[in-house]
Amino acid sequence: MKGLRTVIEQDAEIAVNQRAAAGTYLMGLRSPEIAAEARPGQFVMIRMGQGMDPLLRRPFSICGVRDDLIFVVYRVVGRGTQILSGAREGDALAVLGPLGNGFRWFDKACPPVLVAGGMGVAPLLFLADSVAAGPSAFFVGFGSADQVVRPDALGVQGMGISIATDDGSAGHHGLVTELLENHLTGLTGNPGIVFACGPVPMLKAVAAITRKRGIPCQVSLEAAMACGLGACQGCAVRASSGQGRTYWHVCQDGPVFDVMGVDWGAL
Amino acid sequence: MAEHPDLRVSIGPLNRKNPVLTASGTFGYGREFSSLMDLNRLGGIVVKGVSLHPREGNSPPRIVETPCGMLNAIGLANVGLEAFLNEKLPWLRKLDTAVIVNIYGHSVEEYGAVAAGLRGAEGVSAIEVNISCPNVKEGGMAFGTDPKLSARVTGCVVKESDKPVIVKLSPNVTDIRKIAAAVEGAGADALTLINTLTGMAIDIENRIPVLANVSGGLSGPAIRPIAVYMVRQVVKSVRIPVIGVGGIMGYRDALEFLIAGARAIQVGTANFVHPQTALHIIDGLRGFCLDHGVSSIEEIIGTLREG
Image (cartoon, rainbow over all chains, first blue to last red; front, side):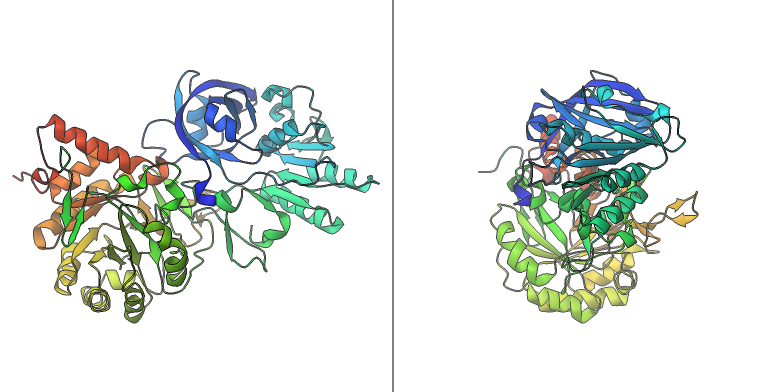
């Protein structure tokens, strides 16, 4: 039952809060309870401090679990993440999680293809790290070389990724979805399943590419949300026709969705 | 034997173990929070607004954070009366807390139909009538801002219902006392105030409203002083009990409402920020009473000393 899943709310010590790339930080929070429960694709809601402004928690995909620490990676984009970047190791932040449904993956014999844009690398790195044989391919797009977050900067050693940058300053000059398309075109065997997370335009392209080829694909979506528990109903995304409902809620029904279940035209 | 200090309150015909309720639309149907807290400790749960038919809600974006608050335009998404009775209520009624069902409709008759549909429903302690939601263009606002329409809706629900009727008022009016008086005159057992204040936020890069619905309801600590003032105004002008709500984040905020004369309080947006806020408030009220040598919370309610 959805309502009976284990969710933990606690003040967690900041064990790590360090720069991982330009404007990008890795945060490790000490929570043995959440670390024990977390699955790739799930997220946590973190308060930005103690005050009333900013008021609401922010959702972050879990990018990894090591011992009793959970990790998130974030880019400073607004006031909340600005405050977060100034938080000191040893301080505590209120954390709620793990929340939502992780990636669902049944044919473990066939390694997945992973596609990420920017901070979308977070849940996919957690997934890649949990696959014994590693992903068959891991494509990550960034704006420029200084923004590139490599797996080793997030504590995952020996994980190879193929990089694309918008300005060509690192890796492939162009879109990460071009790397995906080239990979699938050159493939002779079973491509397995594609997991993706990133900006909406990128996810739309991934959805179109996988759909055209009949390859199963799941995406992790982001939405403004207040509670993460299914109470506020703020995080609605439009469902595709035939789902028996107009909206999904990212926090409860997602954040991971089958591409076929989402109305991409409405996003 | 009453606990010491005694937090029990009566809200008209409704007797509660403590004055702390969770506000409609911020606590789902209770179950969403069940793994995080002991719901039996609550004075009551006001469930998400129930309409005659299921409602999917507004297009996203539906929420945006604002200074010390948030705007929402959820659009009263809910499972509808039938699914509430069959799927939500059986679980809720097992709790040792008051279940108050918030209802709304698009016409006077529809309000009446929902109230009638809840008649005899086991485990429902009271009905809270939403005449104030600012999000639904075809209803809500029109009822709550007009004393005559407010009275008509109230009268219809009172007639159709076999339970205590609480009416939740909108602050988006010139003089809330006029609506309160009209609703009292129509037979309401109690009032809840305030609902959200209508507001909007603008995306300056694209020069569009942030919310798809354009406007939304402002909630959170930003609105608390307005809520305290309106509660005080209404407490002085009606005889029926008032439940205070608006930006309560902790027990000190709750005490402002109780001292102003509210006989109970609801915790709303704070449930999103800290799911256990309502329980912390109960503990805080108990601690305050002990520290101040108060044996019953009744000794605090309505004790404001005005100039």
